[in-house]
Structures are given as C-alpha cells and as structure tokens.
Image (cartoon, one colour):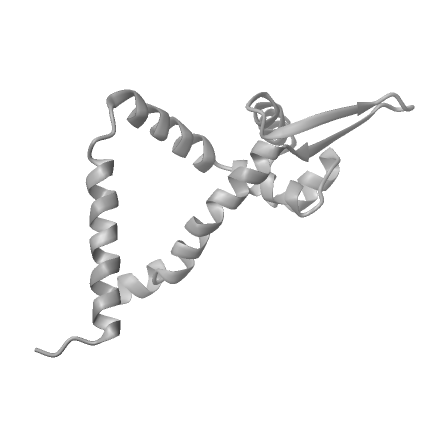
Length: 135
C-alpha cells in the first residue's frame, strides 16, 4: 500500500485527537463538576444571546431588549444581574437625571464569546436537524 502526505497528515491528526481524548479520561471528579457547571452556565437560555448583543454594541437595557428577540423584560433584568454577578458583564452607573445604567462585556465575557466561537462553527458544519430527520 502506497502512503501519501495527505494520508500521513490524517493519521497524525487522528493520533493527536486520540491522545487528547485519552488525557480527558483522566479528569478528576472536581474538574468534571467545574466543566459541567461552566457548560451549563454558558448554555443557559439567553446568556449567549445577551453576551453577543453586548459584543455587538448593546449597552442600555432597551438596546439589549431590542437585540435579544423574545426575552421578557423581567427575565432580561434577571439575566443581566446574573451575568454581572458572574463577572461576564460590567455594570456602569452614571449619575445623570435620570440615572443611566449601561452594561458592557468584561474581559471574561469577551473570552467566553471567543471560546464559544469554535462551538458555533462546529454546529454550523453539522447537518441541520431537518436534514438528519429526512435521511
């Protein structure tokens, strides 16, 4: 059997993935819980949409509400407070009349968006649910 460079590269990539997966098998229980908590937080309904709205320029409550279609005012207020508490958004209060409150993504929030981008790309590369059901 004749081997070519593309085959060698594919085998090397598979070997690298297997090694990484093998290392994942050695994650201790505490690390597993941290991972689960992190994934659940990032995947909680509305969190990513709110953070993305902030990255795209939303600052005031009304801008977030306009950018995140379908969320109620009450839930948006709760999520903004939660994201602030987790250090994902920063809350800024200016002493104007009336008081002006704005929210901006923190460094941690920007890191989270960057980390979620490969997941978005992975999802984009997968067939749509309708296509899988039809096949």
